[in-house]
Image 1 (cartoon, rainbow over the protein chains, first blue to last red):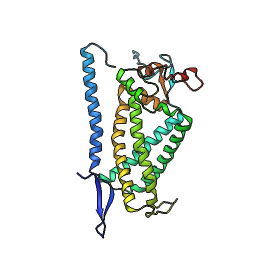
Image 2 (image 1 turned 60 degrees about the horizontal axis):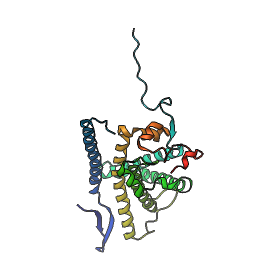
Image 3 (image 1 turned 180 degrees about the horizontal axis):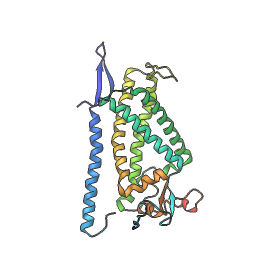
Image 4 (image 1 turned 135 degrees about the horizontal axis):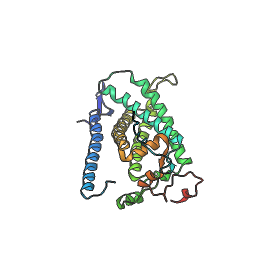
Length: 57
Length: 221
């Protein structure tokens, strides 16, 4: 997976074009991972609180 | 005919706990203008990449100008007219979070989210302002030769990278704002206020009272 987009002009020189849009699904997946990770942590915390007879904060 | 028992409406009632101000109206307007602008900018940038073709440039640059004005307004207001340090995080915030102590006006998580999303939006705005030179508009004529090709490349990379960070952090920000235990913050960003009981869950009343400047408790830091 490329991190940046590079083009080559008529003289063979490489020019930086921008960030690679292959990273768009990666950014989305990172956001989803934060959400899922927090949901799992929250569920585990809630379960642990229930088992110890306390209300989750 | 029986009358049904109508449950009380959800949300704070003034009789339960006094309401305190968390966000001034101007700050709420700034937040929602910025939120709408960022969503429109991400939509007009990412949807064409995903295959939804439309004339995205006018929407993108006009929204970008609106976001730039909003960011400038926020920078000036928070630097010169508000206490900037209430949003800056430091060792004390980390210590408080580890020891489970209540925060002042903003929790460590809120400060980190603000720092991350704020930096990404700032980088996207600064690079976006430079990129306006490449767009023909009724207000100015394009000048693609303002910078050399390699500098434009760096600007495009920074603009794209900050946009991707915005996507990740916006997803997290929206998710956290919708959590039931944090719903009071969302309501405060809409209506401006929290009940004192809601504030006391996460904030030390000695360090943040929610009162205005003329309140003597405001001096407790």
